Image (spheres, rainbow, N blue to C red):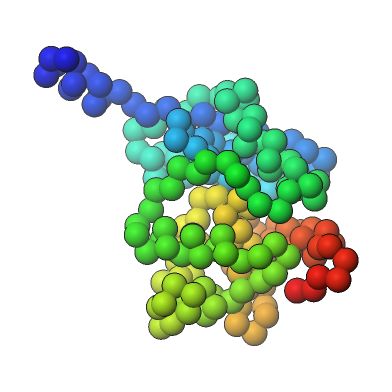
Length: 186
């Protein structure tokens, strides 16, 4: 390949594929790169929420609607919303700082139907004094639902901020509590 060919390849804009999930009362957008899911939107929010997030955090990307490409992701999200799935096996395209990635990985350790506090997350990653930084990293989580930041609550048990809004957070927590196997408690 010539130097010119390499330059043209580098100038190619990455494609982010998107679709909208409409399932019963749920309506939100999802997006994926060729490497995996990169965004799950807030319940009932317009396309502009996703578009702004993509253009801010994945500069130069081109958005292309492709329901078929997003079908594996949509299928698992719908299974979760129907109570048929507790863990996701889809690929995620993680882009964040090393600290954010560490926090997002910790979120995956929170069992279905349970909650941890911001302090619990900070302790889990070995940074007990970094509670505010943990909160900021959780707030930057682009994967609502699939990386379960809705399972994080305030130290006193209070529901706290959530990009999808407290109604969405409450609904997700209630869904998980309702569908816990008999004998399991939070």
